[in-house]
Amino acid sequence: MLSQQKADDDLLKVYGKMIAIVVLLIILAILGARYVKTEPNLTSQGLAFEHNRLLNVLAMVRSQWLTSGRPNKMLLSWYDVAPNVLKSTEGDATSQTSKNGQLTAPLDSGEAELIGTDNWIKLSAKGWPIVDTFDDEGCRRLWQQLLATQTSELALSVVYHDQDKVCRYASPNQASLSYQLLTGRVIFLSADK
Image (cartoon, rainbow, N blue to C red; front, side, top):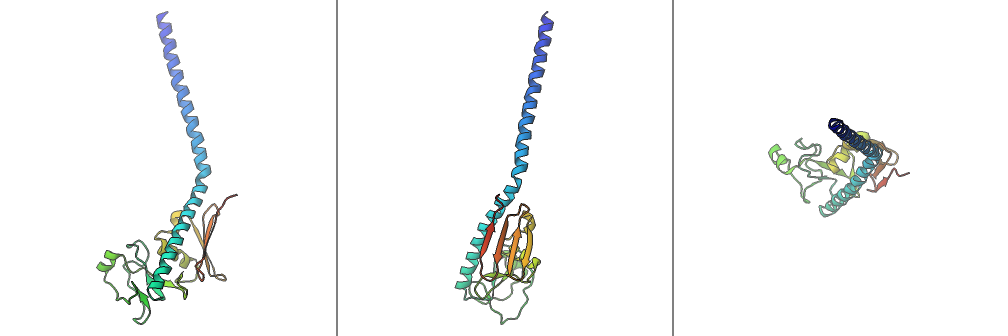
């Protein structure tokens, strides 16, 4: 009789452990399903964060443009995370370029690596950053120059609208960010339903 009680107790312990594991698996399944449903929303929030970053960078670039004597291109320094870093600058010595409002001579690669230079950005007559080439690749490159990140990091599709001179960055869940090159206007459209 004692061995029967011991066997019953052991069996109850095993059943208890099995029930605990099943409950844990159900909870994990529910949490996993909720995560999968919220993943597109997280992408949209990432684009909203980038929207705020872009607004801040554009304000900084334009204010620096005003204080630098309104040059047609300007140096952005992100410590060699943006494109063009450590590449030679092309152009003639008479073109207006600015670093703290002064014309600058090309730096050697050691100096460029030290201060993160050679990320020159073109500016419109009103001081807003514009693309080097008026196409999708130009918009992709502008994003990288301004925010020092790749559009692929957020899985953004990039489209340039030639008629309106607008770069449009769209996330997979249809949230989008549009930058109007001529006016500097930035429009964020969320994917809320």
